Length: 337
Ligand SMILES: NC(=[NH2+])NCCC[C@H](N)C(=O)O
Ligand SMILES: [Mn+2]
Ligand SMILES: [Mn+2]
Image 1 (tube, rainbow, N blue to C red):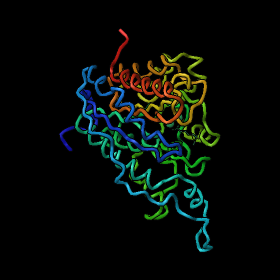
Image 2 (tube, helix red, strand yellow):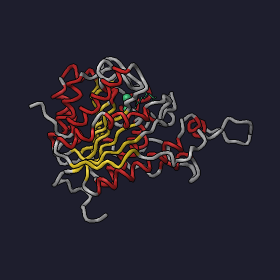
Image 3 (cartoon, protein in one colour):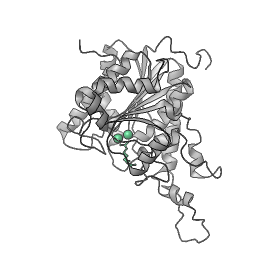
Image 4 (cartoon, helix red, strand yellow):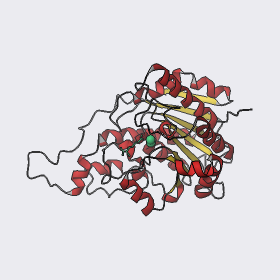
């Protein structure tokens, strides 16, 4: 694809590509793979069209073709011959690394292809490990892109720091290349070599309130800008978004990838999600972020992740799916007046 220069956003996309990603392999709770189906059934495609976009929806990404690999490499098995290095032991704790790597790689290609056709990819998750794929796809099409990550969590655990082994808590460690290099081509880690590199200064967080100890050290060590709920309380969401943009996009010339984990919202607003944390963004704060990013005219890709319709009662599910749809509409230009 050569007709588009890699960073041409002079004419921002007029077509949205909606990618349903029914994937749950980055975490243990079933149901998050049903998120995209629910969002689409709630009428998201029509709603986006009504905002004036042309919408391409090629169905939900087919992951059935991805053969389920062994969950992890056995290093503590029966054989003494297995070298039990710290690296191997860490890799062994990851949940479904080969599956996650393979799925995200195919998502990266899909996002890249849409972006290179001048479309704005909107990826519906699925768990947040998918962002390894979506952001890699964005960076291949726009190498100067920055990332605004809206979440209760930092999702930046490395293979060494993760407590849970859930890769939805790790995508940014792969994007920032914080994990050790693969020791050999057949190492599990080599399956993540395709992931694009996001420089730490082009990442900013809003909404954090449940950051693991190891993650706090990583944020500090790499000088990663993060606005927690404490900052939202102190400055107000308007100022926080402005400061976030000033950090990752000082000249307001970089394409923006917005990755929105629905658990950034308070559980009273979005209850049906796998790792809810109280004290989150209000309904309006969440929407304000999306509206303000839209106003920059720089949005080139959007993720909406971690909607899990299998959690909580029917009314909570309806509420979460509805708010998911309205966040997407706000990011795509819906205004209050
Ligand atoms: N995308 C998410 N909801 N991530 C939650 C991550 C929670 C925790 N920090 C972990 O590493 O497992
Ligand atoms: Mn989260
Ligand atoms: Mn997340």
